[in-house]
Length: 301
Image 1 (cartoon, rainbow, N blue to C red):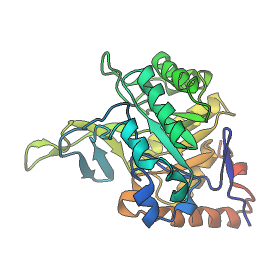
Image 2 (image 1 turned 90 degrees about the vertical axis):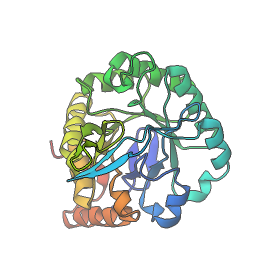
Image 3 (image 1 turned 180 degrees about the vertical axis):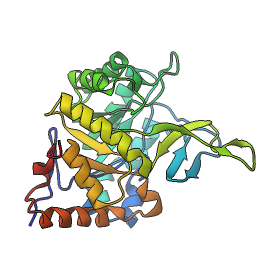
């Protein structure tokens, strides 16, 4: 029987499947209806230093293959998040990772400190948050991204990862900078910029006009990022993310160089999708004589 455990930096996960931030809430309610034990970790929705209201509706819109979101990272702020979840994370049936956002490195670090004190197993730094000064994403600038990672890495003593954007002009350069700043893993990738028009109402599909595109169409875009970063840094732990709907998607990401694989948008149509996806991946591996998911990493290249 195949061994499903994988290593992502200093962390050992019981399976290579990760429930992605923004699609499983703050884990508690989702874990009550999902098969949480199919996952090696679940990443809570991003939290900032102070409450963020998010954007007005419409904030979600289906498109032909996937969806657009323009949520604006609505959240209650780190103090309230800690109050709600302190002492409860161990009851969710899956290791919980926090997700930190902020307007500047100090805010990211303060959020990370709160998440760590609350007992999360790891922290994913959401670098797709706009910088305060000019509205440009941290994830698009290697120097700024590294500054945030260094601030978080220097504040907490638990593993931290950097979630990068496919919109970066040179994602390998951003990956290198964040690894050098102390990132224990890289999540590749966040959503891509996308937009659409409601032709009956003659207005954008989402209130932000341009939103984050996710779903099955993201897979080739994220796969390219995984391959480029893995080729540049073969030993860097990568979590592949984008368009995962079935077990063979997991296998493909592993072969491209990822060590674990995130499932996101699929949870909106089926909160229990993880059990099926993991079962399909295991069956493929067993049919092909694979003894461990780890042995597949980068094997497609």
